[in-house]
Image (cartoon, rainbow, N blue to C red; front, side, top):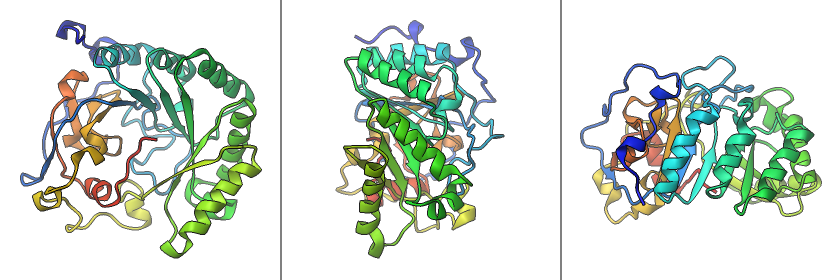
Length: 314
């Protein structure tokens, strides 16, 4: 049952680092809209844009000094979880920045796991044994599943570290080993930085890597590169021909686009998509209820999702 508007969360009342109002729409006037088909998933930017790494392809340019979006406290997250429960949301995702910079991460996940399945997306470098055991305990105590997705971009330090930073390969794989030892089954998330000819062999090598590190049921999620943030400096940005038109959407199933059924909560309010939290026209409202409406597919990232069928969900 949907509650009254008086119960809706307002970040301004919980001490959120709310910045100046964000314009609702500065998008191309001729961009097609994605219809809103129902709220299946809610994302939380609990790590803000703070990260202990500074990956060269990061689509929101996260790093140790990026405060565009701040860490979210447990008190800030809870009202949105309550609202999501009333809206019968199916599952939750927790991202950043690096979520494990948030000292309340385990408690936030426990709150979410009381309602539904949860996934946390991490670079894997801040996972000591004690934290992995706490995550496993939260998973065991819940009727719902907890997934941990660890980002990696190469099967060796030589291929990974030039993108993610010196030592990041071994730190991330040590985190994977600790998660597996604690009884969790981490998913490896990889940005596709290789060519078509290498695709099958590269995917298999990632599976082998997980098995070598103690993961008995290896799972690998491959995502396309999004030409946003630092990736525009590493390779290029989107061209004028990489924008969706109404013709692109004719006969296309909007359900394949994640933004038709999900929203992301940040310290600045609710945005339409995890890829676009820095876009001025991605702001949807201060509450989840305010965000339940169509949105223009006005960005190059929308083209990538349309062309590849990409989804950030599991």
